[in-house]
Length: 342
Image 1 (cartoon, rainbow, N blue to C red):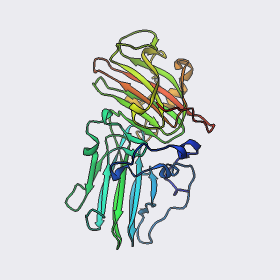
Image 2: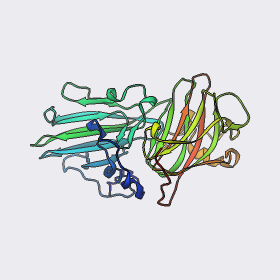
Image 3: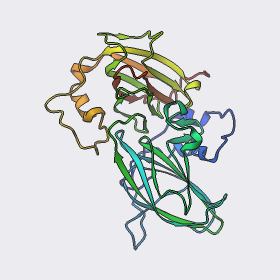
Image 4: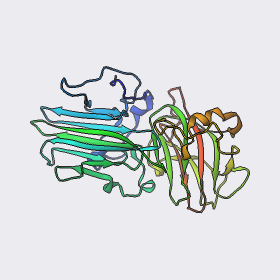
């Protein structure tokens, strides 16, 4: 069980343990593997702290951390640890390294990855990020940057301590941003919004469960009063993908959609800008709770089942249109995996 205040989520899907890797991971920051995915579970346990500090000790070999605060790790022997830091959809991860006590060498390092790198793939993919994968890695040494910032709501930290041990301390903050793009969600359900904010970029939602996408509101591409399920020749669209990998080339695109559906975007006098701390805080300050409140008016009736280990919603934008899609994700409760090799 994970410590109190750190919300970790359940991953009890049998097929996860059966996924075969086509080739060994080429870099060490791909080390957050299938066994680590089991850390995504519900539950709470007592917070571990030192007697002289309110800082929380990070668990090894894996931990998932979503609560802002001060954290530390201390070891007396060689060990490898990997931590996933998560914020709400409208924030990014900020880590400030406040103390370092280890030699910076090949067998001793702290490494930051902008995103999440599983043996199942990288999120965001290279096509959905401003930087190549290699440039999203930041080695933290005495001469390196002590403030690390992600580009989306998830980041990964890997620690290799030397034979005689080592220690470091950090402060984790949620930094609110105005134009969130990519969302990684280990939660089993929720409401989310993707938007390009009238820019040429691709934004994605990814989760580690099979489940059902229900489209509440969509405005993508040319103005039209109906949703199109055939978007051949269109430069702007939404792709709904499923697979046992996070790499889009290894996933099946179950459906493509463009056009408009769901009526007007869910807003209203009761839709005052909520606190950014709202875990489902969405585009333009519209909280997902308001989406649920107006679901009767907005539900499009379009539901897309995604029955593989990984579910992805990808908004493809040329920059010619102000695109957005609001949807709910509901996890498939059965232990099924209807994937085939794509």
